[in-house]
Image (cartoon, rainbow, N blue to C red):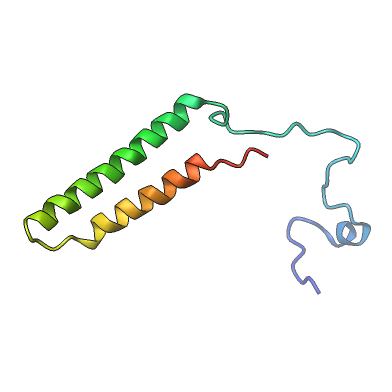
Length: 93
């Protein structure tokens, strides 16, 4: 049982009219502006690849100098690879 009806009164709950739109009225779907922008995805991809290369290069340099590799570098590289994979596998359907 709902004790707090929020912005609706008790009559609204009983009648079922909770401000839903008219079912016959077509509502135009709103998409983000960057959805069809190839440059946006290329810039995101290039930035993520740069982070992966920097993390990999830094790890190799630290390993070559026999120093311990910070977990932050490993985490940044792993997160960038995951984000790059999600950008490259966009669901188009």
